[in-house]
Image (cartoon, one colour):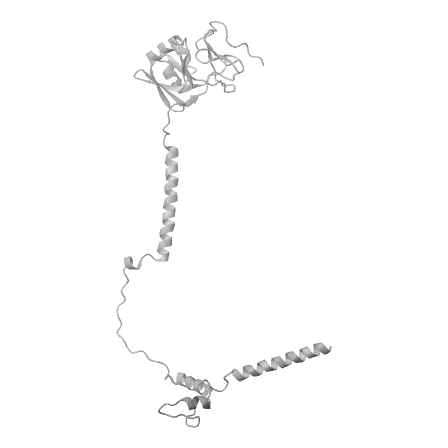
Length: 285
């Protein structure tokens, strides 16, 4: 208890000393204070000023005089009348773009850039692609030359650039073909040829030719097709798919980007049977 009491007394004394020092240093009655005798004695100018010669105003007196001056209006400096000049708008080139104009132009520019990119993408999507080979229209050549090439190759002409087989279509089967096939197919068949997609409609295997049977025979599951791609056996759901064809001035063009679904099961416009041994055995289910 004694130590605590001593600490409390010490804190009280310290607080009292702090308050006394603060009050002493504060200018409560004057703005500038009074000159000390030593300071006055050092002023050795032409005029000797002592403490009794001049009574300096106190700080409160200065504040009161300032308030009175403001109330009476003597402290307000009145502006001198001047001529009114007409306002002229500044030159836009000298001032430059304002913040709002800059933001508006930036937003409009962003929208224009976005719309331009979108429009370019749409045009690129709608514009026909510049492709060659498979997926494009391939000019195969003159029909007469193609038929000769087919006969020289043993009845089957393969074009790897279009992933297609080209075979000869007999003229005697045209009438029956007109009741089964579409115009883009008949365009080449009436000229004497047909273009077949190399893939088997069953599971997509590449179908090779069989020179002994003169059929197409799939090695994957044994599906068989006659020389014009009509199904003759196996698990395939239809005949071989074919491409749209056009003939202009005796030149055959094949659109490998337009695949036409093969004929249904049972279609046999040519009546061709196997002309020799099959290359692939009978399919098993």
